[in-house]
Image 1 (cartoon, rainbow, N blue to C red):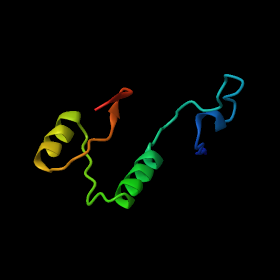
Image 2: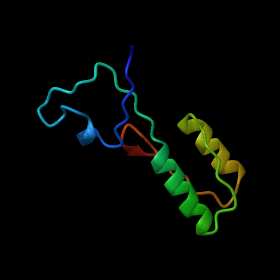
Image 3: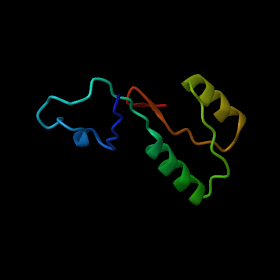
Image 4: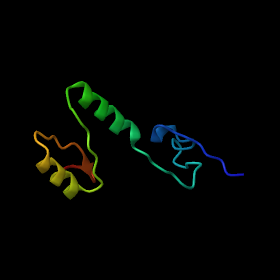
Length: 79
């Protein structure tokens, strides 16, 4: 029977310290960073949060809604 294990940080993956992780497949979901950032933005006075799957879409949305603050990255580069 397949086993699903959860590790909140890469160094918490069993076997990662030895360089031989016990997993064959890893799935990464970056939900904590978004929810932390979004809740802080709302707390600081943001009236809405919009998400976009592509940088061009995000920039287009920012042009339609003023004032706008773009927050995000692609390949470790700010958008």
